[in-house]
Image (tube, rainbow, N blue to C red):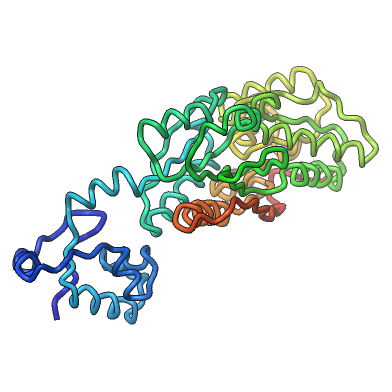
Length: 362
């Protein structure tokens, strides 16, 4: 039996004798898609088998090897590189480059895309950039098969998305007011999640609650979470004090300064809700630099459920998003649209309250 040679995503080991035999016999070279069709396995499975990945069953490897040997398949190095550069590339358009939640999401998306036979390339933008116009330019320059947007403003999509010709997914954001046949969405219900965040702090006896969040005019997610907070205060019989909301970018330094401004204005705070775990960590540093303690003097509740939240001191209480599920479903929707032309879908996933040591009862 002939071994499977070559690596569809790395260096190919050329088998000259097979290549010569193919040329001599006039056999038309097969593609991975042909092997997938004849073997009955998905393209991603064939790709992993050719790369000898351990997550492919022995049965699948045996069947794929049979097809490879029957047709003398040898991966073409030049064609493979061209395919990777042009037809197998998807873009991840990311707003902000200091968000630990998005970093974890990107890592999972790139891994999932690779398993499906695609290369996921990142393009980072400032938080105030128009991601849709930038994506339209990238479509002309790089010609990706599809795009996943992480973070952003729905206003950009309302005004400019018609210029995007390829399948897209808006990850971490679900917006009912935008609808396009080539735009799927995957995310939690941010209004409900923020509503539950304030209700949780109330259940712990807190009545003097501050909020550190994003710019609600530029960040749709921040606007949704702000709406959820306001609705929760109202349902609990309180009017939300606008002076208790401090804007920050989704990074440590910006949240640190926002928390300091909040502490300057409001001396009687017992708790703070931060719209990301990154913000929460920056806020905790500001509290400690004032000689105060968390949670003894001020409780801090985060949002996202990043890995660091579980190892930080104190262990963060947070509203946790299912990072792996969001990443996998986003990539699956995009690949399905690319390969099968399936219609756009909106997928709402569940969040959960993850208790920790940064919040106490009063």
